[in-house]
View 1 (cartoon, rainbow, N blue to C red):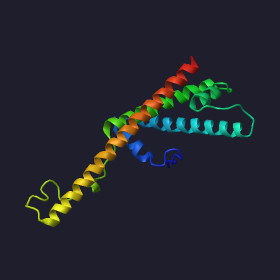
View 2 (cartoon, rainbow, N blue to C red):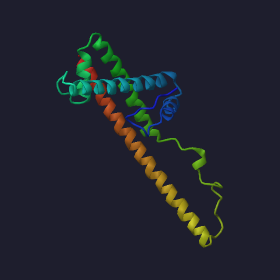
View 3 (cartoon, rainbow, N blue to C red):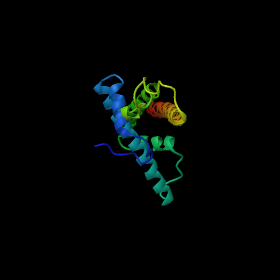
View 4 (cartoon, rainbow, N blue to C red):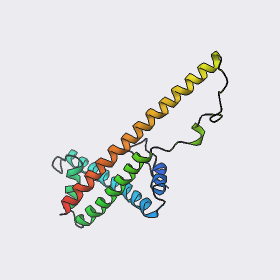
Length: 171
């Protein structure tokens, strides 16, 4: 049911939807998150269409998201679309910021085997190697978690900026 975004192939919409629902257990946040995905799609579609028009010589040069939003404002019902995009960008920004605060979901299968009591006896050589591998995997998970939180924080700030731009263009 979820379409994958070609601009962010590593992003998991199901994880995002679960995060939106888990952030407060509210349906309105999940709906706002879906509107955010739609807003992203409209923005990327507008940027792509503008790029094709420039390549064909039918439009002047375009300079990214800001010009795409200005182009939408000039369309019939463009102000209505811009308002909907602003709400969607706010939704996506909130979802990203919630993801940054909560961190990525960790599947139960990646938990250390045997629980807290595992490895309580004195390890031999093989045990030390096993423990070293486990420690390295844990360090990799920590680094991945920090990177995912940083990416969510950055996305939240970018989409909050896009929402502010869209609202400024409306006023």
